[in-house]
Length: 575
Image (cartoon, rainbow, N blue to C red):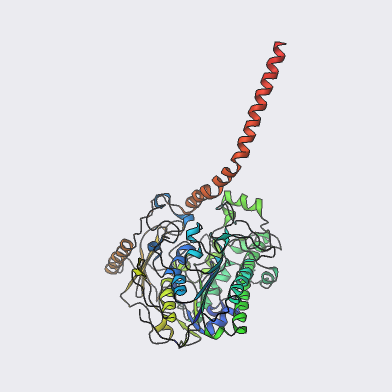
């Protein structure tokens, strides 16, 4: 990696949206209003062929290290790791000790380093942000939590784990996640006062379930989704065609778990439309608070010297707690799940697979899987000196490329597999600075393979082609081959027509898997079963342990009372 000299140290702001689809920002044709994110796009480059992992913590591991997630301890989310993989090298579910973070590199370079929001890379003291290079932090440690209150969002955790600077933290009474995360970031920025550059990372919970947003943002989308998921899907396809990122003649795969919108009764259509209004409102609320951060930096004279990176950690979430018996009853016991106040405190909403498939259009699939709908998400890099503004790039890029890009902008040389006398994981990604500045039109060569795997779904990209397999229920674990230029919707399998290319790319994938120590997924693996196993160990058993003294005391009283009754009856019979 070469380094480019800039006249002054650049501030860096990384904004991570949660579960946003490719088409959820105005700059990529969305019906959702995101004016502040769009303003960053006008000042920078929007990427339309950018890829992440299909779930959150593996993406976040790569985002902070520039290395494949298997090599830094997060081969899978802890919540979906098969029992057979748990504890194996690369599958610890937390950042490994030899994973060097961008925060550490920047802090050693003289930067202030701050993080607010979702972390999801470990919650023991040694794995929290203060031991991974962050000077100040206020984080939620798991995959998500309620956006209005201090409580877990699902039967996965015994409680919501919040920490400030490594210590358990409480939330204010007027808490709303997107607002609070930006408030904290502004607080940390306002306390520095020494002229040093800063690195600020904000991990929004928007739009992870539960979908929740202030009423004014939800109501701003009233009626927008009344025509249903098929109409949204077609609208998103048309937007992608207008942008030139999806060929007009290309097809889309059928909607997963399709249902006839007009076949639903009026009450169900109303509820489903309201769920999407909440989704859009949650995204708009995040955009609004991003605007507050931009305003603060402009007011303090720091905006013009700040590089912004905006991305989503994966595509839209198809999970529907209301279609799973155990979670359905838990949600209904703890939340209101319908009505005009959906999105407010005490309510719970989720999109489910049909809205997720529509949101991901024109790409196939969604979160959890190696289809483009799970992997291809928005990326904006804004404020890079010498970059061509208001430009869109279709160059293939990955989340691993962000660290080397920001390192070059900060003047930090590549560290290889050693840093300040200790062994570290080397970087896999490539700097995008030449592409941003118009000195190159690609990051990876046409014959360079780029591999990927998560929970048994896998892909390998080489030039215009993609080799991919997806596990059930989206796929059947069979390798398929697609031309991503003529058929980015992944509808025409070329594996029979191009057997030599298929074999070559399968060899490339095998090499990727070997280098990154990718473990084969068990034949009986099921995402829901893995989540149930995690819930038993991290929700049910902790609660049973907490309740054990009371249970034992109750049993003791019952046994004692029974013994007393028996003695009394015996005494009466003798008398």
